[in-house]
Image (cartoon, rainbow, N blue to C red; front, side):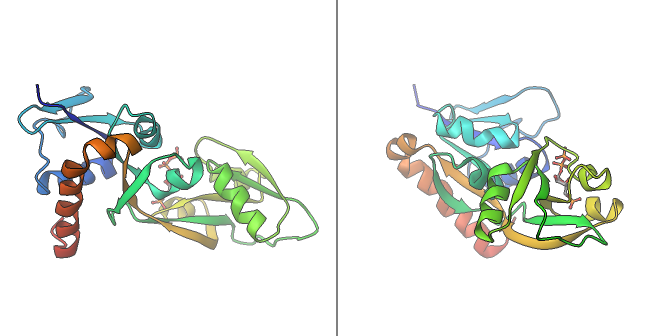
Length: 213
Ligand code: PRP
């Protein structure tokens, strides 16, 4: 029996875009984008098995070897620092990690800054690097609410279109770093499957160079 290459895709719009890139690179699999509750799809001829996971969980599957490869945002890789190979920048899912607050926010350096975020490690590293004393308020979503309700002074969060900030009268104070989707691989799987994984990387490289996706 042919061994299967296990591929973890991030559920949602980004994952669909990523799958279409994989498909164009010759890694197609019937049914992956069908609207259903099914999570695993196989192409036995090509030895491919795709599964949909929560975007923030992709790196866990790959690090632990439940998936050989996967696609995760640079934000997740910097927050959790999983022990995986980062093979390729897919240059999609582009957005920014940013500090934002209410439009009349003025920082008082004598006071500890209250920072609400899903990305506690990134926020801590950033504020340590600029020598600012902070208090992290870890939230799991709707981060934009925090400064509006005076739970926090600022937020550290992902800004893509900027629509969520705008709709809540918040503004970007600082862009910390740009984010995009990355192809990652389990370290030992990569040793055993390097030829097929490199074939995928080559296919994706051609696609991104010709801007075919
Ligand atoms: C993310 C992020 C922002 C929003 C930014 O939230 O945390 O809230 O998207 O996108 P925009 O700049 O295009 O408006 P997500 O949709 O993941 O939901 P969450 O609030 O539950 O984290």
